[in-house]
Image 1 (cartoon, helix red, strand yellow):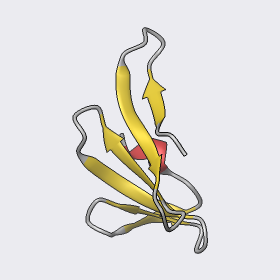
Image 2 (tube, one colour):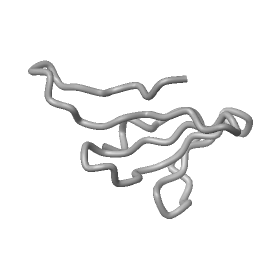
Image 3 (cartoon, helix red, strand yellow):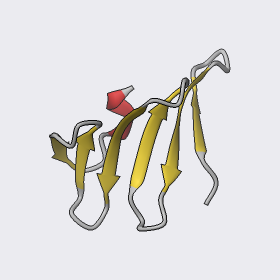
Image 4 (cartoon, one colour):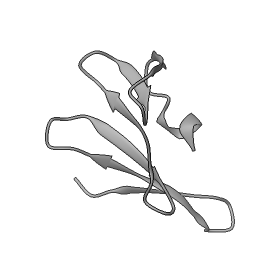
Length: 63
């Protein structure tokens, strides 16, 4: 699956969400810095250091 680009209302790139081969999603900012991952199997979002953020997909809140 292609990366999903996240843009503001002016079209400025804020970040990208990528689907990894294991099914997890990761979000990176507009500079390519990892901000976090979401695991749909455990339904848990973790930040860039692996700390839990919450149950569910909270990736966009990490930007």
